[in-house]
Image 1 (cartoon, rainbow, N blue to C red):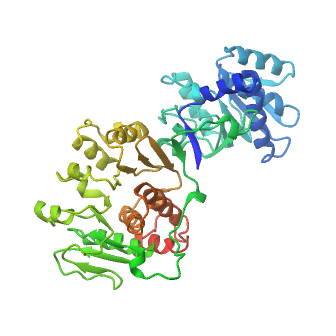
Image 2: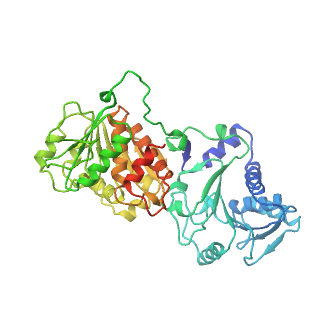
Image 3: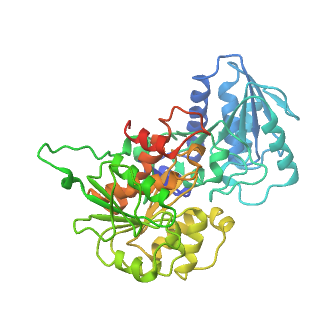
Length: 463
């Protein structure tokens, strides 16, 4: 896991007060880090065009131009002049080298966006919008300095926004880089050190970015065990029975010893899945909501949840009156997509929001919900999945559009439910189930449009 921060100004201040580093020295290290990245990937002599703003993000770009000058064909565009003290200092140093300053964009091999960075706090002016559109139209390796211009610290993306192939962010990872909207514009994200290792630069953070190496698979380490050693997951089978079958099949594939679908009807199930009309006595966790529809009356639903088992709640249950009662339980995982989260948020009396409002501040709304229900684990689906409990927040950035297909969420429910049944704590079940879900999607051999949910289930076996 890597730490995430809203902003790094307070971390910069620690460098000044604890390590004796100046703001100018941090800037030089930032430019040096960008220079190292570019030199490792681009032969000498290539054309590098750096578009610099008037503030300190522009100053980073001016310092980079100085470091590259002589080894590369460097051109600098300074459309708004230099205004911040450090920008003026860096401009003076660069002018002494007689670097080429240009007034209009021209063809290049590398285009560096050093216009706004994390300093963007207001709507873009028309001149800036036009410039960003022209920058996006250039055929070049596009590198953003700190944040792509047009992306703010909240993760909101303006129109237009610089679309980077690579974002070289300074000092530490900013949370806003991992909003759903940001995924379209940030490209590959790399952290540039600012003169001290991240071990010393960063402090503890309740927000974490999940990495591939964080996945803990439910390997069977005990030789003396049997199917009952690995839990019995119940899946409530509603009106759309296919959702429950996908959930149950995924749970079986992810290590659950037994899986029972709970239904009033006689079902034609895969041979490995069992069916029960009542709650099995040895059940260890329950998934409910997926494909629920109107299959059960309120009394039947209450009978199915009249126990203290861990619950994995999804889909139709976010619109059911029983939801608020279930939120009082101790071990509960919620896995809404954005529209379902809006219904959940309103049902809990936290306010009325629509999907656009939520997507504009996914982190904020997730944390506000978890402040109201600190014992509940929330998994908010999206391009970058948010998993949160109390004040802790984890981002899974490994998903892709491959998963944008009906049934993917039912597979996720089964993976999480399997871990709950095997004794994982709810937060751990959500984290590792989500990681397995997204990483399995990377193991598919079909085209990105062709995934079938059962392909995803099969890929789980190859993690």
